[in-house]
Image (tube, rainbow, N blue to C red; front, side, top):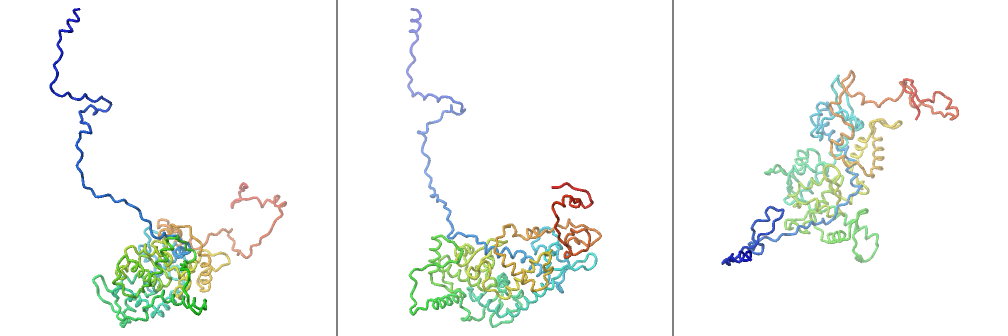
Length: 510
């Protein structure tokens, strides 16, 4: 009873006059969970920010997918050694009497693309049909062209001098296609080898024909300007080929009335495979009116289909004037200003696989005129191209020829036979794709560094001059060797059949 009285004696607490705080959130392992944070619903909304709408980035596929074609790639592949040999020959012929010491040749390592030290004597010996090494004194080594390579070089000079009129016509046509009928000489120099121009064309044909050309001074250097327009030259190779095709088709049909075809089909080159959409685009591009590369194109808008039609005609005409109907894509990009080429010239060429082919072989990309080739061989070859094939045959002369074969490449007939054998087997694909650099070329040829020299009592590198001797020291020729057969039953009893080392010790049988 007393306990109850004690409980009743405590008065109840007064009611609060202010709002009670919400109970604290339950504690958890997170240390900041007990912080008095306001609920998310009571937080004010963030201010609106005016942002630009984000554009979706979509990768756009190319109009035409480039496809690899082995026959065209083999043309670049088989000229890799020839390219190096021609560089060596150009350096050699610039010296007096076309004889140069190996010490002087070492100064042109950068021009040859040799970044590391290589044995130049080992490099020259890899081409016995082109270069021969002459020893003058103890440490004086010189090299020169072989008689066969010397004759080919002189024949090339003679043909270039005889074809001076053709070179002048090509220069005139090139200037007639330009916008201002004026091109910088340094840009023309990129195409001088492809067009068959002489090395010093600026001082020769540019000055001998003032009725056609004149040299003007520009801010970026001297330029060659056209002085006379010839309408007879303003006919492209595509127009001439189209007229020949029409005449041939008319003769084949032998019809009184030339009726149009019922279905307009695109005749693609053999081996070219394109999708249906690509064939449709090629057909639409061909149906466009032809724009001559010699016509005025100043009014054509850049990026339009008409401008691309004109640019394709210019590239087609330039490739038609080259000796081998091909050139480097970089050489064409130098004429962007004169012909108003687009910045993506390479992509434009790839978009037309029915006319051109771009090869990725080599250090730089090359563009081919498709209609001028058949199975990696030129259909029409000029005399300069035939000389180049003979030079390629001399380059392919082996260092150690087979027994019974020609030991040297000094005879032109042997070079012609080697060229024919090489061309017959040139349609196979080379599996070595890492052979594009000059350093890789020298490394694959077996070149060594200068640290590999062995200074002995004899001439430096004399072990490279002769093939290894596998005989026993006798001087008997290979024609005296006689092959005989033995009885298997008696051979087991014969002691001479036991294999021995050169010193006479027996070795175990396999």
